[in-house]
Length: 587
Ligand code: PEP
Ligand code: MG
Image (cartoon, rainbow, N blue to C red; front, side, top):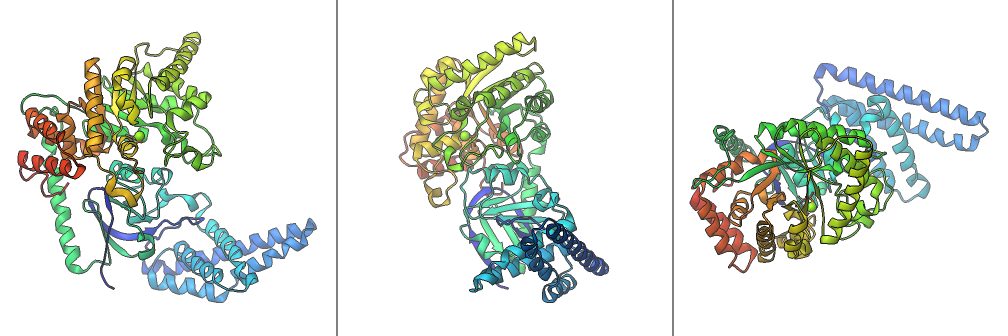
């Protein structure tokens, strides 16, 4: 088989090699599981047993329907029985188990998919409609083989796999906390889409914007994912495999260099201190924040609470999670961002059409102000947890003082209700905003008077400033963090905050790219918040430079006219200041 190289957008660094699993929008997810030669008869027996069991089930249903005078409908199940008794289908499965040495559920799911595809192309309408029967029976057999629950569950993956999807929604990736998922790649998406953010959190390489990877790759193809360069190699030749094995070792060595600075402060050579915080998507990730010596949590994205479920999270449930995080970071700031629903993140339990909360629409704080009950439940949980440590609240998508005042009015109501109920909370809890809408950056001088701190959300600030969708691969080239328009807004925000004596952080993906972090420090940003696994690398950078050099870079960059010129200068400056460390793009 010929080696094929696909080029996409680098989304999370690292290299992985292994077998592909295509996560298409099918009704069930059944992943391959390797079996030994001696297990082949066992798998065949499991398969045959599941067929018998399913047959009995169908006959029972048929009988029940006939008894209830639904005879006409009962006939439908005759077609299902025919699928179950189809010799060719059964032989196909048995043959493939013997040849491929994979679990019978996976082989059966593949064969069913093949049959469904063949039938869907048949011209005769009656036969074409048999696709539904095939899928129904397939589902029943699979349920009998692995259980209903596991049919939707990526957590049940037991073999190391590379997940390939057209798109992976934040709710898909949130279910991928499984060490057997070793990389992701998607057809669509951009540099700061949530697939990229999640992959960095999980520490697996990822590529987005590959355009047609799902068409070019088959399940079980051997792949190499190079997340640094955005390259995906299908059926690599021996030479390519050997090259990447060496690269993997180099990356391990590169990471090894950071261990000795773990518990040293993030301070430049000339004594300027920068705080490095962690971003969290789920409460459990706080362990990783601690292991990487985060100085606090700069952004706890709480919307993952609301995904992959049919009900709303309760106050108690949220309180327990927030308390867990704040107690795990004693004496350190933990900034909880209130619900940022919208864009590509939506609440599963509310039946709201997706297009209603597009990036430009009814999202984040706008949604919370319109649904005060949902908002109040969350605020109550956060305030209650504030009694146990140094919590802060941060509102997303604030576009001006009006949003902030409305949100604060609701917060005051919640405070009053807790006082009435005699429930303790931190009366001095700081309330800040994300600066991610250009109008907030433009009015930062006004907002700084009413907000305790700022955190610049560059992921959104870039998309709204440049009018470029952050998850669209077609316009990925236009999504430029170094664009002078973006940099001017950041500078304005930092200066306005400092005039009022307020701190400014950056919690977007710009913070974990060494050359851009260097630039942000030079522009006066006080702290950077990023996925835990990037902290040590950025700390190494901070400890290897002088603040004066970073400021010089910022001064020069603010004179440049294009995003490309800015990125080139920032990259070259980093290479000059720290020769050899980041130049090989090994990170
Ligand atoms: C941002 O917009 O930069 C940000 C950190 O928030 P999110 O990526 O969750 O939109
Ligand atoms: Mg944002």
